[in-house]
Length: 249
Image 1 (tube, rainbow, N blue to C red):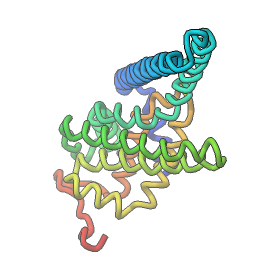
Image 2: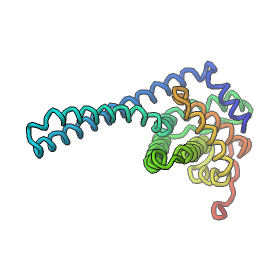
Image 3: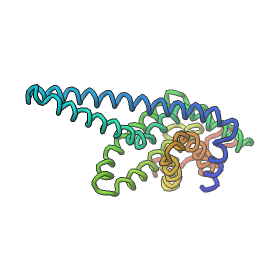
Image 4: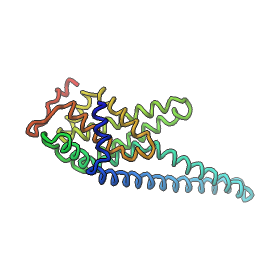
């Protein structure tokens, strides 16, 4: 596993990966900025409505204090959005990965496994569905974990473990679906659940590093391509690797 992580890291800055890296970072930044702007506008609008309702209830004399309070709340919300963008980065990178899964996986397969057939390109719609579903699941889990982080002190650990599970599952299944059906890819992931989760810890550690985490799709996908190869073995003649009977899983 350490060797697979080292291989993934060493490939990230190689010439074939640089174009994908720049596109991935660009798309991640666009998504983060768009989300931040939309949320900031939403909170500003809500603060304005609240100020108007309070002024109608308290009278015109309360206009100045309410305006100051609305400004403070809007500023606090803006700062919260900036902090929240860090927490949302795993969800953003999961979505970004769905657009570049084949570019990354194909380069790893050609470079590191030249004697084996490359996998089938994952349909963009299927990849996008997986990315959106993972992003929504991540957001839901983080909403649940956030109060624990703020009030009980152990939310950070829960956040980290949830990130490891979500991203480990996402990237492994994307790598596996290049060789298996979606059902078989999920079955293979369940079969090696402990290993995939442990590998997800590496991705969770990577995505927790500010700025560097913009490159998570490259590291996560490259890493899980190597892990999938190690767990399922080579595919002679392009055949799919056998998986255990799903009724026994």
